[in-house]
Amino acid sequence: MLTSPDPAPHRILLVDDEASFLHSARLALAADGLVNVDTLSDGRLALEKLSEKPFALVVLDLIMPQCNGMNILSDITQQHPETRVIVITANSEVESAVECMRRGALDYIVKPIRQEILTLRIRKALEHRDHLQETARLKESILSGDLRRPDAFSAILTNSESMTNLFRYAEAIAASDVPVLITGETGTGKELMARALHTLSDRKGSFVAVNAAGLSGSTLADAIFGHVKGAFTGAHQDRAGLIEEAAEGTLFLDEIGDLSLESQVLLLRLLQEKEYQPIGADHLKFSTARIIAATNHEVTRDRPFRRDLYYRLEAHRIHLPPLRERREDIPLLLLEFVRRAAEKFNRDIRHIPKEIRTLLLHYDFPGNVRELMGLALDAVSRNTSGTLSLKIFHEKTGLSTINDPALHPKTSGEFSLPKQLPSLQEMKDVLISEALLRCQGNKSLAAHLLGISRQTLIRRKKKKP
Image 1 (cartoon, rainbow, N blue to C red):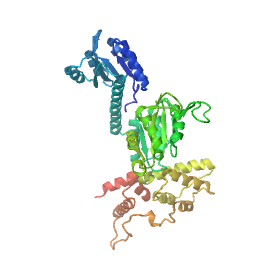
Image 2: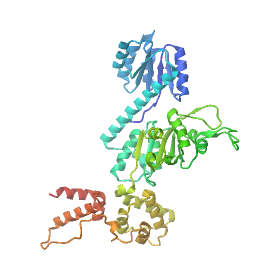
Image 3: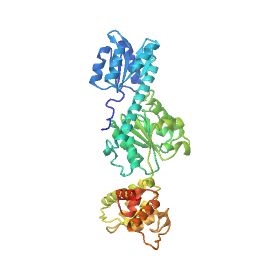
Image 4: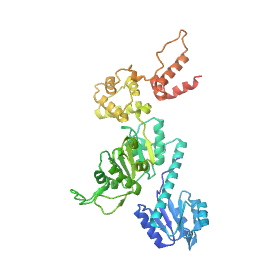
């Protein structure tokens, strides 16, 4: 069974006998957006606290009057190995630091500590823990071969192994707060994948989508960050931005490849600092939304795009293949889109000619899944009988007949039989080889052309000497 999502992402426990340190550290963390923080002034209660609820990180003072911090460190790492520990102490001896690291401490900080340094080290520790968990989830997903929550991908119809592998990767990274960049041609289903990631994350907030194409710096700032009353002419009242609407949820930025350089700067600050400033406000706000971005461009190659922003966004990257690279999905998608269109237009479609499937299996679909959906919608809307018209698909694809050369990009030549007729088994082998050649090695497509199942084709291939 796959590892479940982190039950308490970024819950922190501060353990120190100095009340002033606990107070100031908690304020500093809250100012940096880390508000899920508990404090203890008695180290003897630390293990009891960890037994009550899970913590991602413990910040532990090594020297306390009631107990030995070194022993508590050992107990935490042994009994709660999923919890990371940062040791803080006034002891600057190297031997002490080495012993703490040997007992499982992730970091060792010498007092006095500047609050911004403490916050930075805590952030790094949490990121380290997140990466380890993502790696473990991905490894478990690959080894098991099963999807933990296939229902999250119900809107993405596929029989493709490459898509299933992407689903496994999505499950592994869904619980993280790290940004995700989804790339792929127009019509490949980038927003559907973003919604699946949001569903898998179990985040409390909403999924909020915005098309970033063409948004200028001021327009983007107002749409995403909002404004306060009087910020500009026409700002008669405060308006929350989309980032606030997506609090504790997901903000999906589509077509980020079209962002202006001015807008890219604003987005970079949001990703780096997790903070933003509504237009006209005199204070910063902190974001708890996860950012998922999508583009159909090679942004660093096709157009001006800040590399630092690109590398922030692509911490996790999912590339959706075009439909022409997963042709085995075409029959499944065609059936579903025809069904939906028939329901929408109240048509009784009883038959889809095999020639339509054959034609579509050899069409490259520059508009991908969205284009196939449009083809099905148009064909059903114009249908006056229970059988779909092949003519409509000829018109739309530009492939005029079943003998169009574009339908057969690779062949071994004309069939010719030798004077001595081959056996039936030999002819089967020839047909299978020819179908695989025409389909460029795609077994699912070759099986469809031959009118047999993929399993039957593979079985016959194995029998061939």
